[in-house]
Image 1 (cartoon, rainbow, N blue to C red):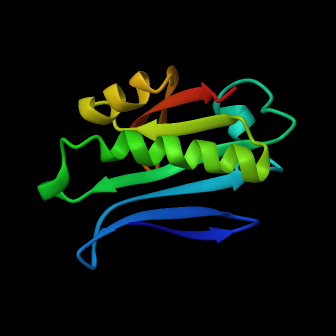
Image 2 (image 1 turned 180 degrees about the vertical axis):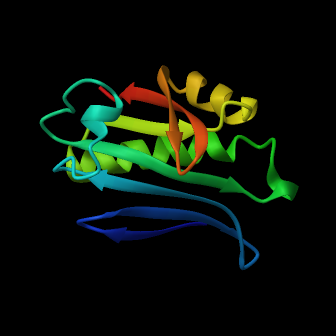
Length: 130
């Protein structure tokens, strides 16, 4: 069962519920006005429609290996594109998180650059949905 919480201005949280337990979730942030300065992070202007940041993807350890991360990212992209017409997605991943780097890569995200984010190195990945 997929549950969503949408804040039209700020973002979307999707959760997968099984037997009344949250087993996976994703949060995305809408950034129509580039107030978080993504254009400077990616060294280019963002889409006229804005940019979406994949804030986090979490899957309960017992349910890993079932492609829930990929499914949640894809659903979030489709939902966001239909609702907001935003077609540029950004994700930041720890460079040693090979699983999530592979997940994003398999969905068409490409490495843009490395940054320091709250004192930790992150790989910035971009994806144009269309």
